[in-house]
Length: 450
Image (tube, rainbow, N blue to C red; front, side, top):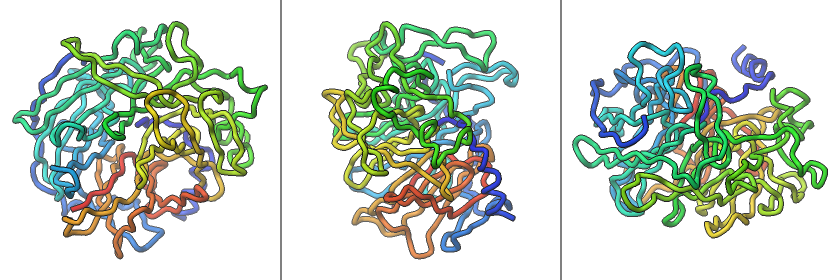
C-alpha cells in the first residue's frame, strides 16, 4: 500500500475540528523481542469519538524492523479460526517502492523488509526477510495452509515471494516478471539518483494487494502510467473523483485535479485498455518468473461501469488501484486510493477483460476522502470461542493496535483505515464515521477470529 498518497487540503482543518533484492532468498530469523506488549500505552494523541470501542497496543516495531503495513491472519484449515497473524514491515528508510536503497539511506541498508509472525497475543513466533519493498500479502490456501504470497516493489521491478512458513527457518522463493508481463518503457526512480532505469509492468507500475477467488490469485496494478489528455474525454463523460467530481471534491482540493486519465496504453505491450487488476500465475519450469494477465481495465469498451449517483453508465477512470477486499458474497472490491473511491467487480471472470463494475465514492463530512485498507467484519466459524477483534497498523509510529467493540463487531459491517483514522463505512452512501482519530498514519487493517 502506498504511503505517499495525496493529502487533501481540508484534511487538517477537519481533524483539527475533531480534536479542538532480486532472485531467490532464504528466510532467516532476526533478533526481536518475544514478549507481548500489554504494558505499552496507547499514544496519547489518539481519541475515540465513537465511545463504544476500546484500543490497546498489540505490538511495536521489533528490533531490526520498521514501518508495519499489511496484516494477514492465517488459518490451519478451511473454516478454522485464525491461529496466528503475519505483519509486513517495509523498512522504508532502507528500501523504496521500486525496490532500491534510496539515496541518503543509513549506511549498510539492505533492500528488504520483514514478515513477522505473531500469535494472537502479540508474541513473536518468527521473522522472515523478504527482498524489496513489501506490499501485498495473501495466505495461498489453494494447495495448503502453510504458504504466503508476498508482493514487493509496487512502483516498478515487481517481485513475488512465495513463503513456506511451516519450515524452520522458513523458506522464501522469489519470482520476477516474465518478458511478456513487462512494459516496453522504463521509469526513473526519483528516490535514487544513481539508478535511473526501472522496469515496470504493462500498466506502467508494479504490484500491490492480492486476493484469491476460487483457485485464482488477483493482484492490483499499482502506480499506473497516466495521461492528462485521455482520448475518451470527448466521447463519454469519464468518472473519477480525482478530477471530474467537482461537487464533492472541489477545484484543486484533492491536490491532483489535473490528472484526467488512467493507465494510458504502453507501447509494445498488451496494455491497450488500462489494466487495474491482473490475474497472476507462476510460470512452470526453473525460470522463477510469474505472468500477469489483465482482467479488469478502465476502458469503457471493455468495462461496464455504474456510478453510485444516478447509476449512470460511464468510463471507469481509476488512477490508483491499491488495497482490495472480498465482500460476504465473495466479490472483489478495489480501493482506487487517490480517487477516493471503491470499485466493486461483480463475478470476476479471468477469461477476458469484460467485467461489470460499480463505483462507490467515499466521503467524510461531505468531502471526497482517501482511505488505505478496508475490510468486512467476518462471520466467525462455528469453532470460534472468543470475540472477533480488529488489528490496525500505525505505520509511521511503528505501532500495531488491537481494537475491540464493546458489544462485539457485527458481521458484514465495513471498517477502513487511512488519513490517520479508523472509521466505519456506510456501503450505501459511501460516508465514513470515525471510531478512532489522530494516529500518525494508519494503513493495514484486518479482523481476527479466535
